[in-house]
Image (cartoon, rainbow, N blue to C red; front, top):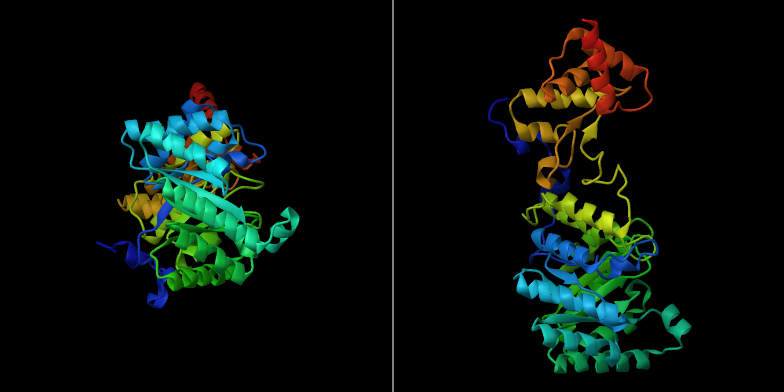
Length: 414
């Protein structure tokens, strides 16, 4: 078993028979935490200083664009977007800026003014509802949507803004309407179009059908236009839908830290990044991923569940004897990567974490010995037995303070 590497020890059925997908162009990421993320009904809109720090964390993770806000919403939004845009310019951040706007001039004008004031290009993400149910509720028809689309995109393009045209509720829209709306926007000068699951309706099969259809529409225009995917998590298909969209032709995907956003939230950007790294599609340094998520959690008032994938407290933590024994044996072989993978499908070290062995009712004595050695405490037999017996009579993982108290008590006896 000497000189073995990961491929010798892990058979990857994700790429069995050379069926693994790889994007033909590099995937881009658009972070909506500072815009759509703030639409969550339970979130707190944090002070601008916290937003600036979140923007820097996005940049450190290699995220390509950040939605800075919807400046048409009012003076505070204008002030925050201006400050964030200035931060990108002054600090020479690599991340690019965009802003949301309805397909009306009144929403686009503040983006133009901020862009000119700061001296930073800002992509205008002009959106309009496209589904029949939305048209019926609003009293719109397709001719109205086409006029709004053409006028708004041309207005923004004429004033020097790059434009992404967004159809809200694309996933419940009629094919002919989708074709006409996107074709109109592209001919008016939009450089990107965004396919949206605004209400969290679609499944991965539906995503493949829809995004493939949209890719065909783009091809019909003969214009090189990027396709974005924006998904919500109402049915729990959010991450799966995002990867289905990539496989079908999306070149930029949207998300928010820890999935904050409207109703039950957007696709978690952290899980998009992590899975793209695990697929081998990106090599971004994601060791600050937990810091990014914790900052958003703290400032938005949204707790991170302990069992949340990759960045939750329990992601790389076990108190189970069989699991712990395997990790300990792997460590003894002197291969750090081996211990990080023997009982984990996600390498903790890639994301700034480490495998942690705790002591609880499902533990074996090896858990106790390991716990003590990790803290430079000699695993005396009587101490190990006392801790082990306490753990077996408990209904949960023992805290560090509880174990140390047992050590002190046993030490005082001798």
